[in-house]
Figure 1 (tube, helix red, strand yellow):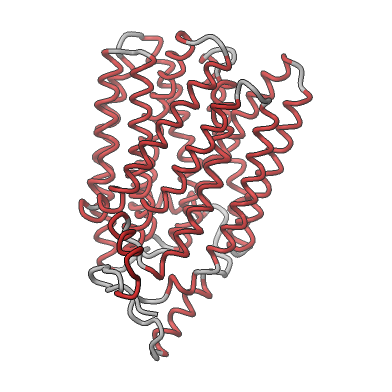
Figure 2: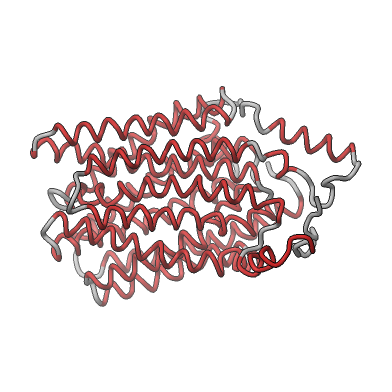
Length: 457
């Protein structure tokens, strides 16, 4: 097999015209295509599943008004902490080929139970089932996506991550488009039970794709330029790396928390996520207020939320196909991490001036599309220069508990600022976003330094 030039990334001559056409869009080498395709199916299934359920959750969360949102976010934070402990134990004891399927099948069983509960519940009981579902799905969406990226940052090198993570995220965007369009078109015709069963089936598709992706670990560990050559030293090192991928991570159950506090680099990632989620919650709270006053029918609210999701993923798809990998590679991780904070500041300024349904829709579409297409791939690159234990334990802790801690801080702050009234909430969000931007710049520089030295601990 002839590889791409490791310095230029140019495709081999044997790849032919189809590959050269693909190369104009995405920087994928021929030996990486199988892995990218399995990543696409994997993340497509996860996001289709989530986006089928997300509009259901959103309308359930404001069933009795936005006043209940702070308590729902607090319940989510507690649930996230409780779920982290058994997950950390699985990561410690089992290889990834076992703990990944177990995690997804646990959540699939939960979905089936919720479908049954909603089918049997009375109208009054449905409100409380909906609140539990809101908390559960807020845990679910972070865990299943975090596990996906844990596997990817373990499989791909920092250089590959910069080129490929934006491309891989295309599968998430397509999944979001399919999932949200299904709910947007069927929410008025079918019961939530039918939609939930569909979401559970998609998780089994994700399990299948994850198993196939993990099997490609040896080929991804092969150094560019050594394929098919008699280089026993390099081949032995590659084989050891691939074999090590399937050993249990080991270490302590609380290692994720300890490392997030001890390591300045990992702590910086935690602060970045904390500030990001706080501003996201500000936007979510404003969205809830605007939708509560602008739309009264539950089906209309569900359709409105699903339409925003559809717009987010359509815009993100265009950016991911043509810009993501090149933005991160050419501009660097630092600038990629600051694009979303800059856009967020502009959006909150616009909402301070015009708090309407149209404005919140435009803001959410642009903000979340930038997150999916640029910021999320860039922040996953940060973990490619972390230790293997941090890739699973610290990353899992930050992606779940720290993420929801930011939600909790954001929702209580939103409630307090909302009582003040006026433009207090968007102005406070702008100040917090400035700090978030600064942390992004620092993290990008640290990632470059770690990659250059090869010191990941």
